[in-house]
Length: 191
Ligand SMILES: Cc1cc2nc3c(=O)[nH]c(=O)nc-3n(C[C@H](O)[C@H](O)[C@H](O)COP(=O)(O)O)c2cc1C
Image 1 (cartoon, protein in one colour):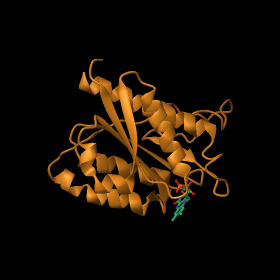
Image 2 (cartoon, protein in one colour):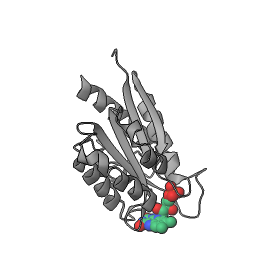
Image 3 (cartoon, protein in one colour):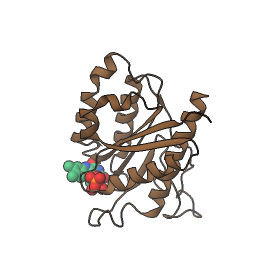
Image 4 (cartoon, protein in one colour):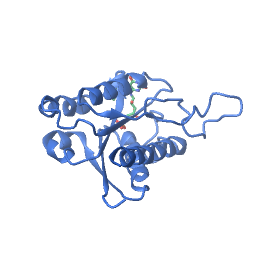
């Protein structure tokens, strides 16, 4: 590719767990030849929305708080309404990830919120194409996509453990894979 594909990862993390996931998504995007990627915290993104205008793909990440996105991430979403009005981010590739402490934890609610948000902006949502990693007797917690998500990437961080160990390696690998998938999708979409 002659032109670089620009990926932006916008995330919030109250206690560092979702930041680890965001960094893995970023590393995955950067692993794709011809892709550039940067992390932007949600409050920073809300204050400088124009930074997103030049991205080819945007990946949204939020911890699951009370079954949906966290309040700081929602503040970014609401701040983006001026961009929505002009459909300034229309036809950009989009994806999303979330992390929570429970196995289920109502994480789907968060990914649904993110995908509806992307659809409102006229973006092209790309899901996770890894089959569930731990739904047979041969599967294990060490497999990628052990959470069994398809709408986006999920991670689970035990509530009493810090971001130095949580989310676990399998979820970090899932996030890495997903970041690469989004970067490749953006390249195909732009071709
Ligand atoms: C206000 C609040 C609400 C939460 N709600 C949920 C929830 O609905 N489901 C869940 O599994 N965990 C929930 N948690 C746990 C967080 O999702 C979990 O600790 C996560 O790792 C936090 O990510 P962070 O360190 O990036 O903020 C909640 C935590 C907080 C602080």
